[in-house]
Image (cartoon, helix red, strand yellow):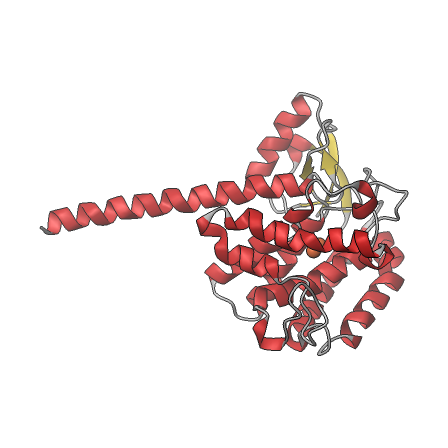
Length: 291
Ligand SMILES: [Fe+2]
Ligand SMILES: [Fe+2]
């Protein structure tokens, strides 16, 4: 009996591990697809929103499971925009005509529909569904207020605003491998925009955005900018990159797939991928990293 139950437990554990890895792979695959529709940003919008939302969730005391869901919802929040035409993708929502805005706002329902297909992604779909709600009830699609909006959606809406305000490219410009020369220049050149963006978030804190979330995000982003001030940028051969360095630029394959986003930490796995991509000439043999 005990033998049976222990073999059942290990079987159940094995299934659970396989399921977890299949969900992880599914979300990774979806995230790659989302990245391909991000040509109007100077770095990956979804990666930024995923990572910073996770950091905010963690600083607000969320458990591991919630942090994973919020990060994944951040990565996939705009999945409903896949296939949207350029005249929608290249404009800010307030520049759209009434009809185009209706089309744009349908990315919420579309994202929810896509993610709900997978039973295991239901709670992530619920976060995605609310990421344009505002706590005063002026958001969409359901004009939800305060506590009717889930925490993940409240976090994503703040990070989403920040990234759009800081890194969205003007309509006539598409993402290219723009070269950052060093972090000091980067911090100086983005400072006025940074101040303006943070002022807006604090003005709308308690109106559109949750006060706790705005405060937590401010702490996360200010710590990052402080840290960035202490980093140097180097051009390093891919086989000499060490884990823990950060990408200092975006790198894409010749067919447009973003494989590294500026600011992302570089893992052991990523180094192996970079070396093989450099060998076949898909990326330069030396790339910009921060240390
Ligand atoms: Fe959105
Ligand atoms: Fe977004």
